Image (tube, rainbow, N blue to C red; front, side, top):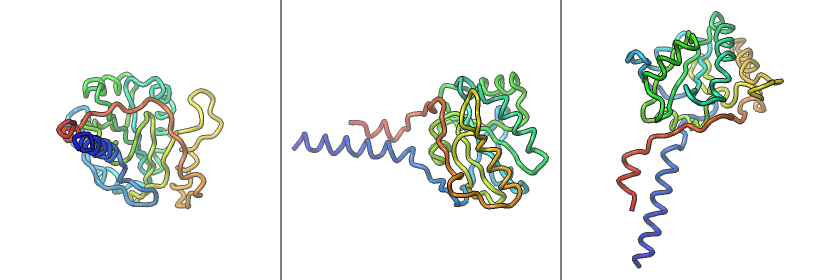
Length: 203
């Protein structure tokens, strides 16, 4: 009986742990509002940031991941190419090992001209179901999720530029074909904070 109770307790813990990173953001559905702080300790909400934009690109990025950093110049180029077309870019750092100070220094070193917000307990990453850096979520003017996945198909010599393709469609008010709505993000895993409720239920 004791062994059975222990097995059931372990199953409960694993189920709870998996539910922590279960996404609540769904394709073709409105993304729930969230509020996070930037490196200057100023709060920003998705609702306020996106209310007059044709599209919002939410990017889970990192200060330390070599794959994410390999995309810095491409992200800057995308931001520059689309900022005057009603598109904004928002970076989110959800890695527990990367501090607000790290983010501020990283922003300055790379001359980022877009917001980078700190997700201290990776709750926003959990809501989006984000697991990698970089990982992209494209929202339209109504904050409906239209694309999820990678920026392009290779960190070295990309031939297919997924994000640019879907951005052009969204900015033009066109539908994105089902085959283009989701690609596989690749990069470093997001290092998550262990939640209090997980620790409290550990046998």
